[in-house]
Image (cartoon, rainbow, N blue to C red; front, side, top):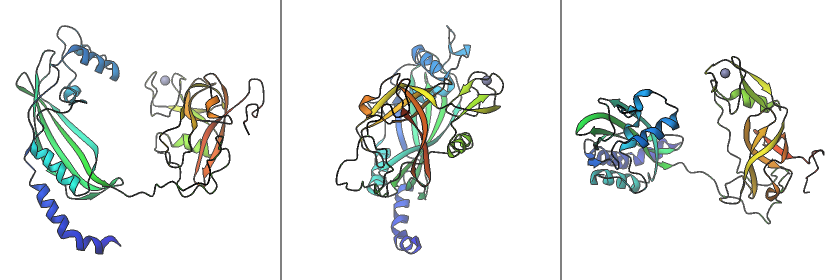
Length: 338
Ligand code: ZN
């Protein structure tokens, strides 16, 4: 087991942790300045994107939605202002220890005072804490918590506590097996001899488990709101039309048309054989679903093409719906290329 190895390396890790801990309390950014004054266009776009019609965010007395706090301090593509050498040093130390990847994990905000159009936003940030080494599904590394104090027109408007994981990615066997020749475009056959690389698993949770139970029974289930009857896909806990949380399901006929599509050539993901067609299929019932179009060369997929659902097994644990091109008025094999 890893115990023995960890023991021999623990002194080294403790040394690193001590050096990381020295950064706690140091400035992460000083006298940062927001790239734009608090302004109405950004507020309006935010409200449109989030569907927030609160009248407090419009008109001559408008305030900015408090949850926009971080929007005013973001560096954008051109980078951050005021980032400290301590913050850069902490990152360099973690990079040097092999923790080269980063993922944001969570944030907490506290609102003290309203921000209004015209306010100049400034901020200071401190490295609040660095965790002990933790092992996650992504890999092993350190949680770094930064607290940013955000000021509007010189007064504290709120705090933004932001946590990231700097980690060394868990090793994956992702090498694609050498193949003597390219598989046929219409990769209809199960991927025999394709090696150990499997398709990614769907993320199944309590909100969408019913859909996957349907798939395992070869039924394409659409959620239907019990209150207003609106159909929805993908599966969600509540109705977008009326907010009702009660629902039942209807089984789709499987008939549909290609609403939009892309043909993937690059990049080549393990377990996928480009080129292949990824389509947004509009089901006869009206909802749309992303899937593969099969039974036709990828380059021949067209908007409006009629398709029919089927279930394709990729490996013993994975079966997915796919849509087979059907000729107008013809059978399922009308556009078959093989
Ligand atoms: Zn509804």
